[in-house]
Structure formats: C-alpha cells, structure tokens
Amino acid sequence: MLDLARLRALHAVSVHGSIAGAAAALGYTPSAVSQQIAKLERETRTTLLERRGRGVALTEEAHHLAQTAQQLLAIVERAETTLEERRGQPSGLLTVSAFASAARGLLPGVLADLAARHPAVEVRLTEVDPHLSVDLVARGVTDLAVAHDWDVAPLPTPEGVERAVIGDDPCDLVVPAGHPLTTRADIRRADLGGLRWVCQPPGRVCHDWLVRTLRAVGYEPDIVHVAEENHTIVALVAAGLGVAVVPRLGTGVLPPGAVTVPLEPAPVRRLYALWRTGAARRPAITEAVRTLQEHWDRDRAQCRPRPGDLASVRRPEGVARQ
Image (cartoon, rainbow, N blue to C red; front, side):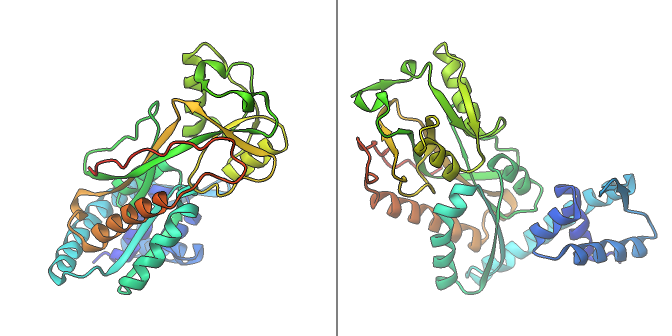
C-alpha cells in the first residue's frame, strides 16, 4: 500500500518544482523529503526523480502519481474537515501563505492570537507572492492564503477556491522631503508624468499598476530603481532618488526624508483570505479568517497619519465580507 506521507512529499515537489521548495512548504528538511521520495521509489519500483543540472525533474510516471496523490489528499482533507467540524473546536495543522507585507504587518498578531485562544491548532506560515499562493491553495499545498489585488489586476479565483475580503489597504504616494509635489494641495494621476520612479520588478502587481496607470494618462513611467521590498523602496525615496507608490500595510513609520502627498484618487489594494471549497467548514479555517478580519478592522481603526506626513491619507470605509 502506498504511504500517504511519501505521496504528500512527491506532490509537494511537483508543485514547488524542487526538493528545497517542497521541504520549506512541508516544514521538513530537504534530506527528509529526499528520503521520502527514495522510499516511494523503492515502494513503487519506479524512478520518480531525474537529475536535471543542479536540480531534479519528475518523470512521466511521477507526474501521474502526483496527480493521484492530489486526489487522495483531497479525500483525506474532507475527512479531516468532517472530524474537526464534529468536534466543534479548531485543531490540527493549518498551513498559511501570505505575501511579504501581510506576513510582516498583519500575520504576527493574528497568529499569536490564534495560538493563545486555540492551542490545538498548529499554524505554519510561509511568505509567498500573492498570485502564486492562489495556485498553492487550489493544489492543496496550502490550507489558507492571504493575497491581494489592485483594480488593474484582479485576483483570479479558480474553481474550487473560495475567498473572503479582509479589508482595503490604502497606498501612499511617497516622495522625498522638499520635492515640488509637496507644495501641491491636489495631485491627480495625470500630474505624474516626468517623475523618476522607484518600483518593484516587472511581474509584481505594484509594478503592473504603475505601468498601466501612467500609460492610461499618456505617460511611460521612468523607473530608475527596482527593489523587491517596500522598505528598500522607501529608503531609496528618502535618499532623494525617486518617488514611489507604497502600500501602507507593513511599511511602518516612514524614515526621515520621506513624506506622503495626497494623490486623487488614492490607490487601494484589497486583501483576501482564500481556502479550498472542500475545507470551507473546517473550524480552524473559519476561525483564522474571522481573526484576520477582526485584527484588520481593529488595527485600521487605530491607524494615525505617519509622523512627517504633510497630509493625512483618507482611510477607506469598511467593506462588506464576501
């Protein structure tokens, strides 16, 4: 009989594309994942992984077995959900994926709250790009994801995945102190031509928003510096090297030399919690989603304009849950 833990390891390798990625997602060491795959190869008398340069690739037989593993894991998930629902108490392992600023600015408090109120739930958090996390949920690798979208890049929700709104995250136009824009009372998107921009790399949602928004008003953005992290972007702006649109979540207090100016309409990104339909009744997931929404509402109610801001940015009203 095939061992479910070994099938889970193979499935994780197929999703993440490497033993290291599978290990990070499962909370194992790479050597432990390799051992599980080796045992599965002996168990099935089939070669499942082939060396490809410095990495590995799944054989055709392995891809077929990984698809079967996904179906089996879905059956197990439904059984576990039913048992947990009957107990009526959140429990068991809950894997969570979140994008960087949510992992830093929202999840620490949420996870600490869950651990204090529901010690029977073991939560494991992985920092993942928001659009990648949707696929991880759909494939059964992650139980719950925190993702976001912008108006120009709606978040795809594949069949079998449900979602709920967590809240809206305002984005600031951040400029160096003393920049000419700081003397303006009202800045429109049509006024953003000719600026030097600091932005995330192509393929990231923030980058796509900037390019599409400026092109819509007749400008090609002059992106002079590219950085992955919002903290790096803000530091470059504070040094006088450009301007940026930065989501407020996770960036904290702006450093000296960086201030916000009012941009109308203000960019806003929306945060979602996503989970598989088959696990929708699982108490650990429903409680985690409730806690995410609760912390978001509480933290936003306590928000104040950043020290050094020249104008407070309007905070959107609460949104209806989906």
